[in-house]
Length: 75
Image (cartoon, rainbow, N blue to C red; front, side, top):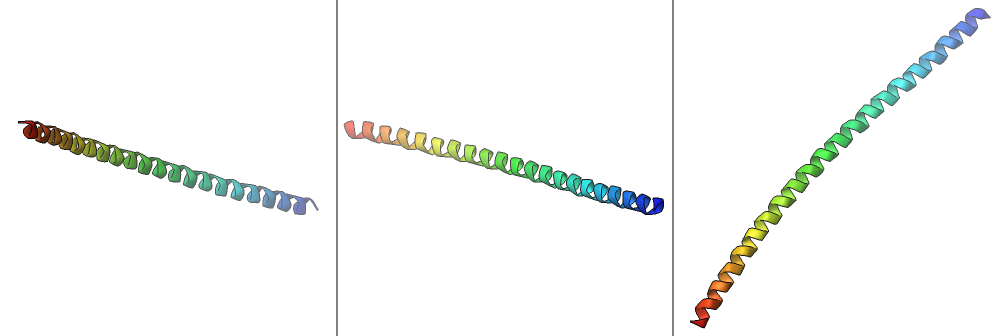
């Protein structure tokens, strides 16, 4: 009977260890996915900011040309 209890205890702790290992692996995978998502979001934000700057430059250039054209028409 004592051997059976010992075996059951060992099996119980083995199950707990397996569960803990799975949880640790899952936590690691979640952390990796979060890091990847953060990196992707930062890259997307940088790209969006670059596009905004480019559009602002084009808009400024077009506004300048429009003012120059307006001045030329006044002459």
